[in-house]
Length: 191
Image 1 (tube, rainbow, N blue to C red):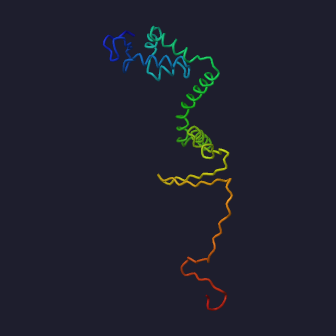
Image 2 (image 1 turned 30 degrees about the vertical axis):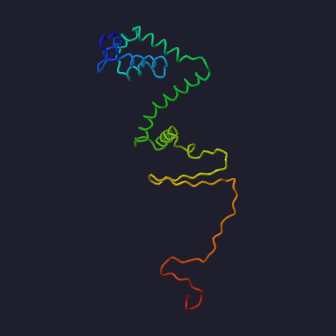
Image 3 (image 1 turned 120 degrees about the vertical axis):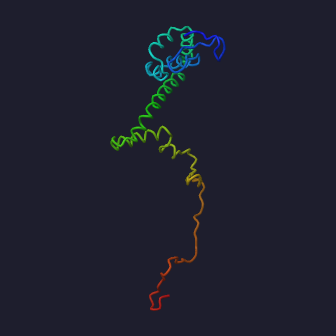
């Protein structure tokens, strides 16, 4: 990696030649962040960024990259419990996100048994907040809202369960709407 005298980001831009393109300081900073956070194995990170072993050997000893690794490790290594929980949560979320692609493939693969495909679909629905939890939230207020989506139109029905109303009674005469059917009173004439 050598400084590029006329790089697009100024005279101090660091560049490493890569098979398809040059790696910039921003790329090296991202690489340092990925490596120090240990969210994925090194081999996976390098493969994702299309960095071969020869390039990695040049990058890992570069002073700019080493400094970025130190900075990223300091940022990531905050010592609070909340930070630790957040890091664990982030690592788990990244792993789950990676597995989503496999779950989609499982759902679409007719060679896999129905139960496994259904479980994969339930997993995808849960990750997308499409399961039971998202549609049946109870805020404890006693209010009931039913939403019906028909095409692009949304119809909502709201009811406050804490308000007690008298039932409405509809009075009137029954009408027969079936053509050709007449009510008989039991006499020969019919009506």
